[in-house]
Image 1 (tube, rainbow, N blue to C red):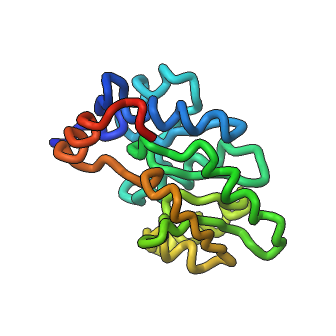
Image 2 (cartoon, rainbow, N blue to C red):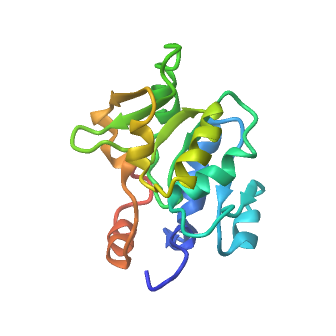
Amino acid sequence: MGGAEKALQLLHGRPLVAHVLERLQPQVVAVVISANREAPAYATYRVAVVQDLADDQGPLGGLQSALRHVHTPWFFCCPGDAPFLDPQLVESLARHVDQPDITIVYPYDGEHHQHLFLLGRTALAASLDLYLASGQRSVHGFIDTHQALCVPLPGITESFTNINTGIELAAANQVPASRG
């Protein structure tokens, strides 16, 4: 997208992040956005906005920073450029948190493991710090270091659509706004 902040690109006249928040906020207690650029634009949504503690850490760096502002036993993580988030996704994952040894729950859409849409124990923050300090950056790799449960959710594949390119954004803008 030419270096532009993806989550602030417009879908049906509103930033992608506005679509995500509209679907996410009813599912969670609070939202923390990790944004290394354009923090004032994200702050207009009246949510906590944090920057990565260290540069070049990838999505896990954002999660590392955000977890310092989470005050619940579990957190939900998702990308800011996934505007079709299912309104029951968090609940669908949360149905599986009663297993004491499970620390991460993430969906499988029938084709792909959706590691960036994860529900995790907030107590994972310390192990995430160690994982990043070791030089590792893979979300999948981090999940593999924990007792994780993959939940099949093939009926909500659209929920995991990320808008990564101008072509994908143009295509999404051609779909009626009421879809999803």
